Amino acid sequence: MLEPTYKFLMKFSLLLAVALLLPQLVFACPPGAGETKLTLTRVMRHFGKGISPADKAAKKGAEAPLEVSDAELELAMNGLALAMSCAQAVAADRSGDLYPKKASELSGDIRERYLVLFFSRMNEFLQGLADYRAIYAELRALPPGERSFARARTQMRAVAELASRAHEDLQ
Image 1 (cartoon, rainbow, N blue to C red):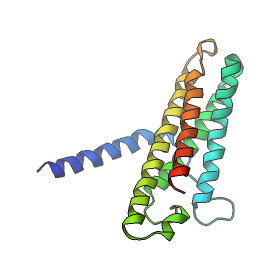
Image 2 (cartoon, rainbow, N blue to C red):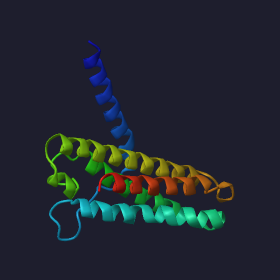
Image 3 (cartoon, rainbow, N blue to C red):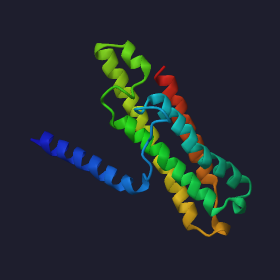
């Protein structure tokens, strides 16, 4: 009897999370020029392109917090929104278009376990990006003299660790 309630709560929680994230995700994860559909390779490029401004601001802010402009914070948040939209696209894909190549080399239960791990790592990465973006939103709301980039640096390392862990686990 609890199972239908549990399923409803899980679906409701997922829909609520998506609804809360949508305003932050001003960018859709686009295919590249001349591409007709999004590919995992393109997603990975967007991850790098999206995370780079945040990492740059975190490093700069650790050394000279007053030198990080509001425009750089906005650029960091927008880049992270792009990376988040790409992570969401991958996490939502069940067509196989955005699966790693290794998934096509596996079959049966091994493939299913691999895909569960893949989606788990992608969702962890998405949460790490959301946390990173939230830090920048908090920093943007503060006057320049009150900004500390220690949490941004910590989250920068955490996101890098999540990416490394995913790559190690999914080879």
